[in-house]
Image 1: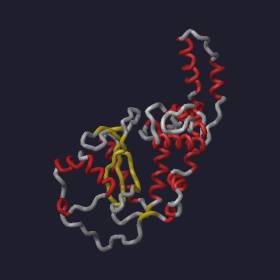
Image 2: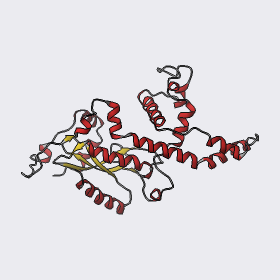
Image 3: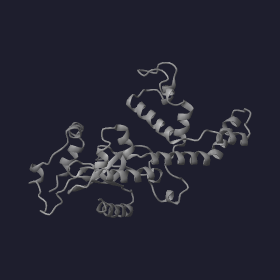
Image 4: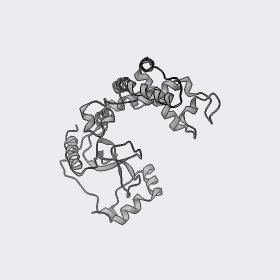
Amino acid sequence: MELPDSLCLSVAKNASRLRVMKESGWGYDPDNFGPDPTYAADLYDGPYGPSDSVLAVAEDPLALFFYFLPPRLWTQIAVETNRYHTESIPARARSIQVPQRQKGEEVENYEDVRRRLANVQTVEAWQVLRAVGLLIARMLSPMRKRIAAHWSVSNPGALPANRFGKFMSRNRFFHILGNLHFSNNKSPQANTDRAWKIRPVVDVLQRTFSCGYKVPPVISFDEATLPSRSRYNPTRQFNKVKPHKWGTKMFVAACADTAYCMRFVTRMCVRDEYQLDAAFFLAQVLMLN
């Protein structure tokens, strides 16, 4: 039984009801959907839910973080970040000379600029993690000023002065963010995979999401939206009837009981790609074990 469009839209646009559902969850509504469906008698009745491996680290937030995003991923991110920095040195050297010419200043020798940029210390995996940690700290305690204000020697707000400077210098932080890359831009897949820039992260999450949960007897197939208004997101779509109108649509295979996401696939804009993704997604779900 399907709900009328008017009722679906009213719930989707009701922010207060969505907040309540987000906090308290939701249950089956027999008034609108009929009696609770029953399943075949031979349906899997074994244990499901969090796996033993994830429960072993559940009490340690840092260990749980590295369970889903393991250290080898951060090592790869550091490698790709250094690769991008090396590849972009010629273009950056020329861009540094442009404003010098425009202002009538003495123009640095091109080779000197390249040498200076190449002498920057190599980014390590722990430094990438520390930069991400500082971004999380800013998210938890934001300020109206730009992020550079966190290195100010005067109090920028409720936070103590120069708190970020105790963990990383400002120049080092912006060097990492300015070169942060997850994959090789020159790979052939970069021309065909819209999610190639974050593909290593997606692949790792696909594996760790499935490893962290024992497959349940009932799996829910649905769509989900990752909110994003960035113009640099090649998978961004607009849907006026969604609570988050701009974002990346995905197919999701989730536990029908707990809503835990076990696998997801990005939905593309082109219809043919959409159909191929749907078939691929269903095939991948059948491989869950």
